[in-house]
Image 1: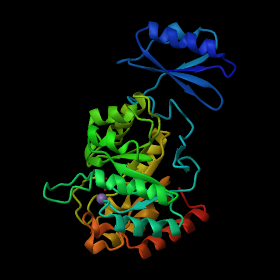
Image 2: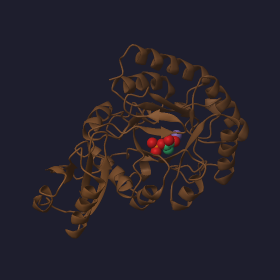
Image 3: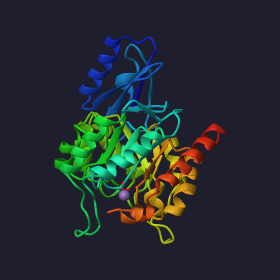
Image 4: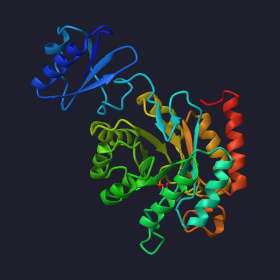
Length: 337
Ligand code: PEP
Ligand code: MN
């Protein structure tokens, strides 16, 4: 349930409502809004009786939240969440953000070359995995701590923020001080212990949709993070597994549209992992922006045929420039959905 306070309600009245929520055995979470404060009631398994709250001073109305996810729901927060990641706004009406870089950090030279190029194109957020979730235990697993040092050096040399993945608690602790945004990948979307760890962090989290996750499962995963106290979550549609095998995954553009009706959180599209092959990346990226995505997560490599992971879906510098120009044209024409 959501207890909406009158716009003139005093902090003491809000606190009295929170106390009453606690007295009923639930957990209150204040949701300050532009026009009014609301108190979200968590911890109930069935509908909450509004009677103990609706006549308290300062209470405007009690609204039943019909969805199983509460804090991520638009019912609870009608206005879009807009985050700041290394100085870049993500969400709402902010221009689509481009997060670009290689699948994996492979060497200092590879990163310096890539970031130098991307910075020359105005990119402000760089991706690069140092702890990699690989299907095969024999495949390149990422540079680990050595890769983190490279990311630190990149941040010192260039005006960029970095996005990198954590696979478990130990990696989370390691990447947290360095990353400007921490990725929880598709394979870990329902790793509830990792989600709880992300909830304790003060860093923005990029939560990718699981390989076969419904939107409700994605939003429940995000709810873990918000319920833990971290409201800075960005969702990412990266394609799901279907019967179709002409692409690596099937990019679910309808998810981009529908998730924005259900939730106030920003949503990105990752056309690289959806496509699996670089010639499909630009059209899918444009489709994502046209469908209303708040930005794109794109793999770019200085020499894709020699990449240690995801080379076939990585864009060359030249192709990235083409993507960026087309996204800018689409946005300037007012065609972001
Ligand atoms: C990645 O971003 O490199 C990655 C492994 O993504 P996903 O979890 O979507 O497969
Ligand atoms: Mn990848």
